[in-house]
Image (tube, rainbow, N blue to C red; front, side, top):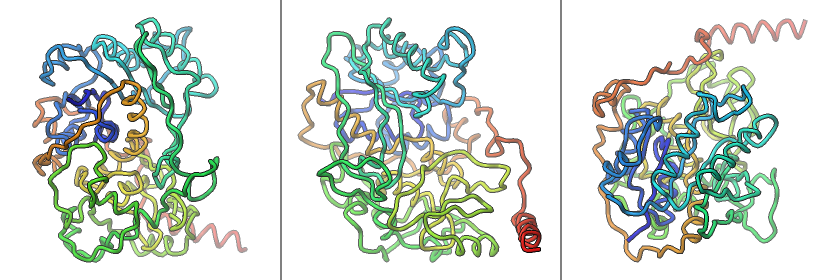
Length: 445
């Protein structure tokens, strides 16, 4: 029997996938956004999804939803949203805005989990935010858990991902149990910009990740849908071969999904203006296009850190998606997923905005797998000798709007603004171009 885990702040399921690939059975996931819940349910149909906040959530509710009775919970993992962290006051964790973190630890303790993994932004390790980290470790100790120290910030590029993405990882172990150690790097980043480890191979590049994917703009169907049957796949790199799940080893220790490898999915086209395309073409790989501030990928380099947010002042919801190294457009959601380490069977909400934020908000699955493997080994669990075959969920789950997903899960829609977080008015590309030409005229006298 596989050890079991619970995912808090689950999103679309990046950490769920990594922990499943390491050998865990993810029995429950908690996520407040109903669109993310729908996507998680599609990819993990046998996992109980709790469409709610962790605030006030009882361990008994998780056990009932997961149908595990009094069975031992081996690990709880997740990362509380960092946008609301407040450093005001004498004791940081007493601030109501930081309650999600204390709720996380409370659920860990109430479930009597053997281990927990808390992940978050690198920024928690520097400056005034270190106080938050220190109080977290102290509070975990009060609940009977020891946090592995010194803690580490891990870069996904050292774990086979063609993207620099640094995350703080905290291992918590119930007092008296064997603690995990931090994973050793698997690869050196292909761009050579970070610490190089002797004896390691070079990790995948942008070209390795994207080179075999057909150009979405060759398919008219992708103007109105996010999937199309495709026969003209290119020759895959070893990395792409794994993402396409064409070998048994590509599944690692996860349950094999029944899927259609002939479908190009999560690939809805973006209708860029001619002005935008010209600017994209004039930008060199590895540089930032000066007007949109979009980063253009270099085929032999790595992706910049993929993010979920949108710079509303710049006037485009495509901000999280960099420019393709070969084509004069932003990358598709599928291409974004490849740069993040998601296999091709894993799908996202069909809209570009939701799909991009589901990826940008998530931990790359290979990094999650590296972390989860350390917990698995510390726990002395036996690797599964067989893999069940699982049918993916209803594709309708991927087409749901926020309102439809809320209705499906019988919850209230979250009070969020879709993309204009700054409150700025979206600007037309033509207006931006006029300003650019005017600045050029002034600069050249």
